[in-house]
Length: 306
Picture 1 (cartoon, rainbow, N blue to C red):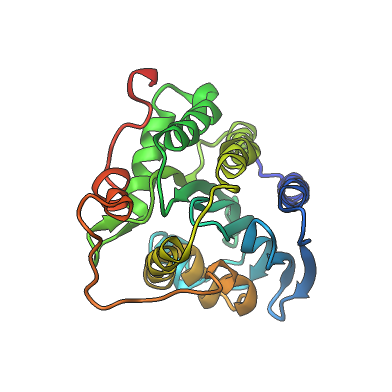
Picture 2: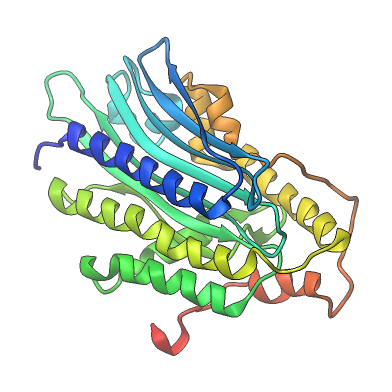
C-alpha cells in the first residue's frame, strides 16, 4: 500500500473550498461568505465559511476541517475495531446550500480523508465523499444533468463506478422512518482505499471538482422563477425531512459530535427556517405531490444515456 500524502490532500481541500465560495458568492451577487477560523482543543481546527440572507442563498456553508486525536471515535471504530485506541487525523470539505427560491434545490457535498496510525503498523487511510440533490419542486432536465455530471466524474475510474456509488447514495440518503429518499441521489462513497494513494486521491479530486459543474447550472436555470407563499410553505415543510436525516442518520454529524468537533460548524448544515405539519398530504395531482410520486422514486435518470 502506498504512503498517504496528507499535506497534498490538505492543499487540495483548501483550494476547493476557496474556488466553491468564490463561484457561489459571485452567483448570489448580494451576500458574501464570512470566514470563521477556529481551533480545536483536542487538536487541529478549521475554516468555516458561511453565507446568509443572500439573493440566492438563504443560508449556506462551505467548511474545511482538519482535526486529530489520540483515540479513534466510536463512530469510526464500530466498523474498524482493529483501530481502537489508534491516533488519527481527518480532513475534509463539507458544504450545504439552502436556496431562497423553492424551485432551486438544496444541495450537499463532502470530500474527506482519514488516516489512522496504529502503533507499530503502517498507516490505515481511506477517502470518502460525494454529493446529492434535494429538490422541492423537481425538473427532469435538472435531474438528468445532475446525474450525467456525476457519471462523467467517475468515467475514468471504471465502468461500474458511477452505478455503484449512485446506488450507495440512494441507499445512504434514505429516511427509513419515513420510507422515502431524501432527494434524487448523486454519489456517495466511503472506505475508498485501493492501496494506490494517487489513484484514489485522483478520484476524490474528480468528484470535488465536478460539484460546481453539477449544481451551478441548475441554480442559474431556476433562481428567477416566480414563487409565492404556497411554494414557500411547502419548502419549509420539506426542509423538515432534511433536518430529520442529518440529526438521526448522518455519519458526518455523528462523527463530528463524538470527536469533539465544533458544534456551530457541524450544525451549519441545518436550514434557517423549517416547519413540521401533523399528518399532512399534498393535494393529488399537484406539483407538491409530484415530488414524492415522481422525483423521490428510485429511477435511472440517465436512461438511454447511461
